Length: 452
Image (tube, rainbow, N blue to C red; front, side, top):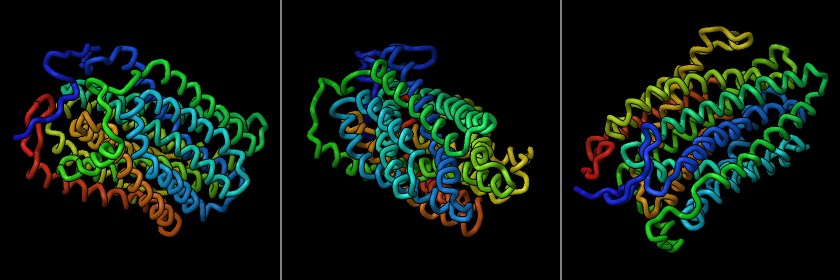
């Protein structure tokens, strides 16, 4: 038996309760509410890049649809190269200067990337602007997962992740509906050319990112959430993230991140691209075509939002590793089901096709939920930012692989192929979770002891 870290502090320290959520000591209602806003804004705004890429590739470059899967995948690879390079640094900064500063700066940098994106004149220039976007993305999303570990007491981890996930879903739906599905067609109808549609929409999204950065600065918890403000050397923090991987459940969480973050990006990138390519082939205006893909993405996001409410209500009753095995199995089924989608039933969209994409959203959010709840429980408090940074780095490597291979599969085999790839990997991780459950099950939510 081994003693686990308790993020809620010592028994003498008690955090407040906000409804059914118990908070860690020092976390205020304002911190919690702004954290939920950050879940809404960060995830919602970052997903626009998929629609934005479709707009730029078609409006700025008039790129042939036969190579758009590869180019989109390569742009995702640019994003992930940057994130692989910075996630460890972001984790260290979070443990040294605080989550708030890193999250706020990340949103401002992401907004700058969006501002520059539609003014690219070559794919190389677009890649540079995508790298700027990625710097902000890595900082802002890394802090979401770190705060998900910092803010709740142990008995409320699953509930807080679920509520945060609901705000993720609401953000994705609203921002997709407004900026991807509504604004571009409205501008086309108003007589704007495709390139102007792209630029106006991107400037609006950029402004939303920068305003959100200010809100984060004003409302998230200041400082470093570590007892006595002890300062751990940077080298020790970095080693801690790597050293933690010898523990089976943390190793499993890193493997889960490889799938959970890659399936999130595959869904966002290739679902939008799928609908865009089908729409262009059906004769839809390039300035409006990306909105067809955005509708598919919105369907997936809506289904994930509904499913997450149920998942969050039940998963705090089960061992986290068992939860991961279930969630990854569901992800495998959902992603592999994309082989049954008929392109001719996307534009116009038919009910059976909408249901397949709804199931896809359920699988994606299940993988995300399982991975996030596991790492939030298992990351040791003293090195939490760094361990979560390594978790994100594993996710970035997964995206690198899925985007590079998936983009080429999209062009050479068909739009369903990248999803099949993620489905097979998800099945493998589910089997890995079953083995870990047998060998090192860990504690149930709320317990302080575990079997390693």
